[in-house]
Amino acid sequence: MPRHVTALDFVVLAAYFLATMGIGFYFYRTTRSREGYTAADRALPGWATGLSILATYVSSISFLGLPGKSFATNWNPFAFSLSLPLVAWIAVRWVLPYYRRSREVSAYSHLEHRFGVWARLYASVFYLLTQLARIGAVTYLMALPVHVLVGWDIRWLIVFTGASVTLYSLAGGLVAVIWTDAVQAVVLTLGALACLAVALFGVPGGPSRAFAVAAAQDKFSLGSFGPSLADATFWVVLVYGVVINLQNFCIDQNYIQRYIASRSDADARRSVWLGGLLYVPLSALFFMIGTALFAFYAARPELLPAEYRAAEKADSVLPYFIAAQLPPGVTGLVVAAIFAAAMSTVSTSLNSSATILMSDFYERFFGRGTSGRGSMLVLYAGTFTWGALGTLIALALIHTQSTLDAWWLLAGIFGGGMLGLFLLGFISRRVTSPAALTGVVAGIVVILWLSVSPAWTGSLARYRSPFHGFLTIVIGTLTILVVGWVASAFFPPAAQAEAAPAESRAGG
Image 1: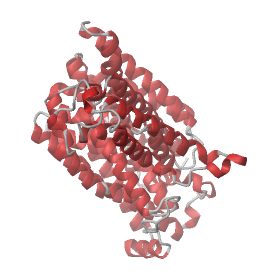
Image 2: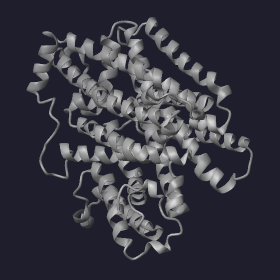
Image 3: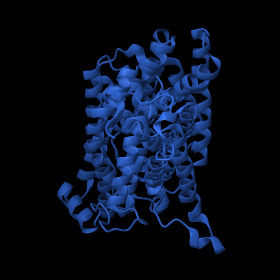
């Protein structure tokens, strides 16, 4: 066990964990209705929902995955963060007002109004698959630091942490999720700053020497600026960030529920700007931690065991540093910060997934006209089921080389072109349901080819995709848009029973 793991660290971690669980159970009495559990009674201030958006964004994928990437390579993934200001502006200008007017708790109900029930089910199913991948990745990274700290079997840690967050999410509903997210956003920021300070000042010669060592090894590089589409160049990551973040802010149930939970339009706008813009410097902080760790262990190589030097162990370097180098008590605080980042994301995903299961499946097909008790039972059952399935995925990720890469690739595949379908309906009234369906089918075919073909061998090798995996969701979205738009020429608007609301159009 690393020498700085003390009883005080465990006390700090246990106190934070119990306080978080306490918040969830505190709100149990006020979230026993459908509206309270899924929309926090639409009464929360913008600063709280904004910090909740930030905390949801800064999962343990960010806390461990980003430092792991910059430690092993460079700042290339930071291009993803640079797309956020543009996307936040688009969301505030066009997307947020539409959802605030609709007042529907599901982000995908409008797709049914626009194109029919198939569109709603398509988006809902792929959203639920995406959340399973997200829950799995975050749960694994939540258990990792405790595994490094004390050496306990990571499989049992995953099961314990998955069960704990599921229980806390099940009890408190969205209002507990948002308020704990606000607290967790502060805790995780303080924890990250503590890590960076110790790493920078731990380098002989201080921060200036750390920057010099990192710069000499090109650790601040944003990647190649060349035209290649087969590599993770700056442009590939930036375009991937634009599409993923558009999907987040335009059609992700996690974010839409926060728009709805805000008490006014002004508060909702404030939440988007606060959550979106703060992530840019915060992600830079995480990348800087990885770079500082590289300089720290370059100057003191004897402090890093050989088992952590392999590329596949990059995600474990920060947890080891936390255990071995941080002062007693601070270690517990930083591990609590990692738990904060993870718990906010998992609890948000569980609540939004349960909301979709209840709204888009149970109430849509089975529960119309039934009592609120039936909806609440579905919400509880959905939270529990997705928590269990996400935990199983976390167990499957134990031997993944880079959790950040695995999550990004899964997000691109499971995203399924939902953004393309949303944009088809949002931008123009010209695209009808048959045209949209044609675009989606074409998009699915392209996404399957992009996802599966890299593994083809033999005679099929010539048909492999030449594109980097990050472009899967980008090309899938463009395929749906282009094919759907072209197909609309063959399916005139008169065939559409219900046109898009005029206020939802951004053009065409």
